[in-house]
Amino acid sequence: LGRRINGALNDLTRSQNLDEKAFDGMVKEICNALVESDVNIKLVASLRTSIKRSVDFKELGPGVNKKRVIQKAVFDELVKLVDPHAEPFKPKKGKSNVIMFVGLQGAGKTTTCTKLARWYQARGFKACLVCADTFRAGAFDQLKQNATKAKIPYFGSLTQTDPVQVAREGVDKFKKERFEIIIVDTSGRHRQEQDLFDEMVQIQQAVRPDQTIMVLDASIGQQAEAQSRAFKETADFGAIVITKTDGAAAGGGAISAVAATHTPIVFIGTGEHQYDLERFQPNSFISKLLGMGDMQGLVDHVQSLKLDQKDTMKHIAEGVFTVRDLRDQLSNIMKMGPLSKMAGMIPGLGNMMGGMDDETGAMKLKRMIYICDSMTEKELDSDGKCFIQQPERMTRIARGSGTSVREVEELLTQQKMMAGMAKKMKGGMANMQKAQAGM
Ligand code: GDP
Ligand code: MG
Picture (cartoon, rainbow, N blue to C red):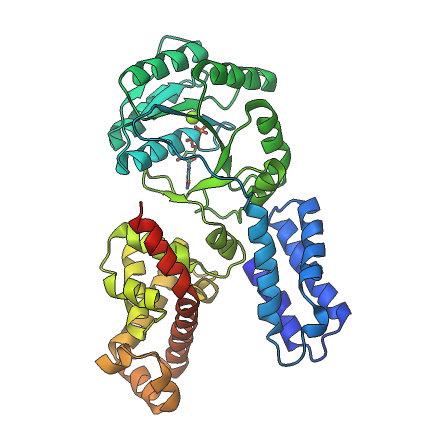
């Protein structure tokens, strides 16, 4: 999707005289790309109107970076779509907060339940799990295994077949034991759809959740709207979790679900392991959807890994990004893997490595690190301008690292782009750090 949108924008930037027709054509191309990545057709139509409204075509004179202006308009409109302007639920300490999960079979409920319990546990809440899926054989075993691995207390039954009964018993028991986060996992399939919905309502009435969360697979596609609407009408969930965002799906369906139900996405699942859960951030979600790279996501990820990042974090907070910062990031990516997932987080790197398998990509990264390692300390700590002023430096480094001047240039372009983003992020990072300090 990102490549297609960029393609459309590049065509536009190249065209000499931008007339209204060329502009319309480009907006149309972008909208087609969005529909193909499963953003709802009706939504895209209204998006098209608002993009046209927000870009003043006459102001896009020759001096203006047209690509930037239009890219930003598309970005802003999409961010608006995933921002439902509703406050997400905040559990209270010292009280029993009951959270119930709903969603179709295979969406990722059981996996996400454990992730979320662990998330709250890590933040000082006493958390536990209740398995109210008595429909699927093995459902309780799966939850038990996950919970044991994450050291989360759990409740379930192998003999009781009434999910409402199990849910009630489990929640009552844990409430008495003063658990603060009680997460109820439910079944996602029944012989009849109506049975599933009836069961959901009965469990909801039995445990009276403070928060009901709908779990949606990122690859849901165009059914997202109808499905989330049907669940909303029955179970009135107050939050959405999108799972499998590490997969191939662009996640356009998720946008449709938010727009159809006016419900915020609170978390995204980024893998199969218990730590693969991130707070949803509209900006980074849309950047990734558009293939623009995701600085914020990278920063969060790197922070959560507790790698040696102090200098880079400090630099980004100051709006600086040196060649050495890039080198550190590259070598961290090598450690973090899988490469294909990480590369998408560094602006531009995803495009550069697009279509490469992990092995070829790793080779590419290694060569970039060799380039950095052939630089002097001063060059590494620079903002890269010295290479532009004295291009012979690039020749020296290419020779020293066994690479080509073109590769050195490519690396410096990368660093320059990230320096630009760091500069832009300066304010945002300061706010983020303040927010984290307050947590
Ligand atoms: P449920 O039927 O809704 O309870 O779904 P499960 O929790 O059993 O998950 C179904 C499958 O999706 C399992 O194989 C999970 O490992 C996988 N899964 C869940 N969340 C994620 C995710 O964020 N990323 C990936 N890659 N796989 C996931
Ligand atoms: Mg399940």
